[in-house]
Image (cartoon, rainbow, N blue to C red; front, side, top):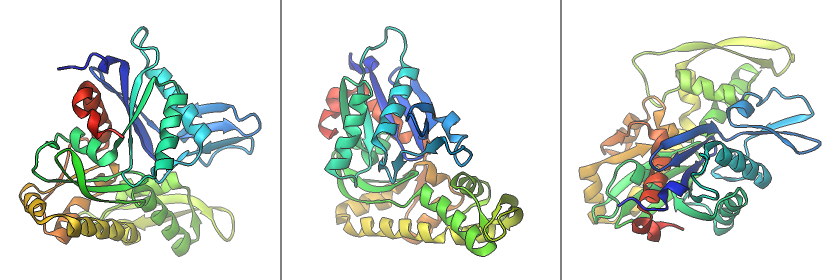
Length: 336
């Protein structure tokens, strides 16, 4: 049965790289970068989301564009609060709700203090109630897994700031690993590679674009190349170079190895009966980081298990928060 309060609620995936908002009955109504730009002197927020992301690395001294979330937690409390306020105002429909109930997904490895910071930010942004749900559970619900059965499901959610690995049964996390290595670390690995090998300075946004364009986790049939522009670290002048997918794959090996190590640790901690279920069911892969070419196949090779990447993996967490809102009483006990 559709919860009568669901239409007055919002589900939010407050991600390190991207923030998504879900309204039951409407679906995903907002998908914007988690970026804030503000005036340095007055602290007045100039832009949030896509408009602010376009300013990253391009602002004069009077303006700062920042990513207020780092590794899945709040790095700048005031900026996150303002970002949430503006996003909530954007998705409000006249007469739909005054102060919504909000469910926010948080990494399973966050501390009580970090969770409190998220809850406070949401409440200050205008929520009537602020509830938290652990990202692996939200992702599993959004992916359509039956989390309330005794059958074990393993989910891996690779976001921007964290990789969440969990085995779920009976609506709870039985064992998990949460590491602060994910898409952002991959971007930085690309940035560091170009600096060390070519003395070329580029920003994180360019590193991300390179990863998406020619990055891969394993050898691909089609090797690609692209031109990259930046600033020479020695001479200080603009510089352009050509790079290929092989060297970017090598640059990405360090963060990918850490992710695979964490997956194996989670599997080692899994009770034997649930291990049997995972052999039968396989691993479900979600999150934006799962879109890296060849990553699912590499995880399958390293673990010997079937790995399934869901459709629209970036949307799983926020869809999970929406489903929880729709059946709030059913899922109340799994909320933090």
